[in-house]
Each structure stands twice: as C-alpha cells, then as structure tokens.
Length: 195
Image (cartoon, rainbow, N blue to C red; front, side, top):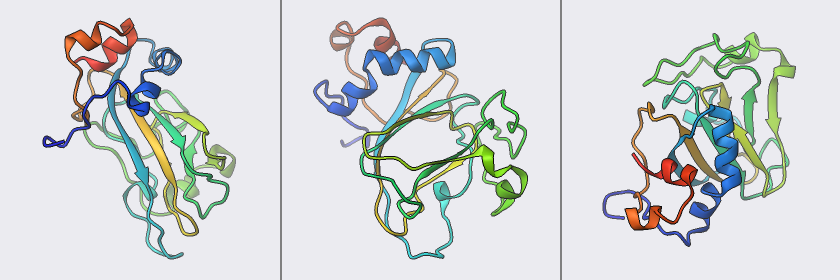
C-alpha cells in the first residue's frame, strides 16, 4: 500500500488466521487481558554460506516492543534441520522466568547479547531448538531471548503475527478496518484491531 501498511482484507487468510477465536483466546490467556494485534509479516530467509556472521534476528536477542509480548510463529516450510534456520528460544527468559535477568531488554530498546554469551550463561537443556514440519505453530514471548533464520541449506518461510499490550512502543504495520467491518467481529477481535 502507499502508506507502507498491509491493506485490511477480511478474505486474506493471514487476517483470518490471526483473528481466529482460538488464537485470540490463547493470546488473551497468556496476557491475562485482551491484547492488541501489533503486526504481522510473512518472512522468507535468504540462504547464507556457512560461517557467515549472524545478523540481526539471527543473533540472540530480546524484542523491544513491550516487556511481555506474544508472537505466533507458523512454519510455512519444513524446518527439520539446523541449516533451515530453526527458531530457538531460551526457556525461562520471558517476564517472570529464571533467565529474565540475563541481558534484559529496556523498552523501547531490545537487547543483543555478545556472541557466545548466551551459550556460556545458560545450560544447554534450557535452549529449545524448534525443528518441525511446515504447518507447525509456535507461541512465544519474544521479550525472552530467541533467535532464528540462520539458513545455510534451505530457505525458511514463516508467518509471524505479534500481540502486545496497548503500552507497546512500535507502530502497527496494517490498516485498521472501519467501524462497519469491526461490528461483525467478536469482542476480542474488535479490541485487537482498534487503537
């Protein structure tokens, strides 16, 4: 779109997915209140030669948008090997977890620990490597330490909606539907789509 935002289209299957009552229910249960839809993207990684330095989200990091957030990672391609850029997460690094103190975010800034620092500080059993077939759905609080997309053998395509509180600092990346469209949705979807 001219304004750089994804146009609202009720028939768009990605809008349908993110506004599905079950997705909104899980998001609401995680937050303990109705969350806002902050963004959604369809991402495809680029292949890099093995040994290429990790860049941005390929590195361990904490997202900056909110101190507690929920992203939904949907693998659109098989991610069955480490060369396919699997999503990785430090269990317990989310708000209230045992590793929350490690390289903390300070919204509106995230955190990018130095290379190797997470592996030195966190036991291997607390690092989840998400190898799975296409169609797999991962719910994750990305205020916790995570990384992915370091693809050396095959590209990874992933759909990625994000939910936050209304305190989130980043602007939305989609056009909001008008009031007549919102009237046809349930309470959780209406709340997710309005300012």
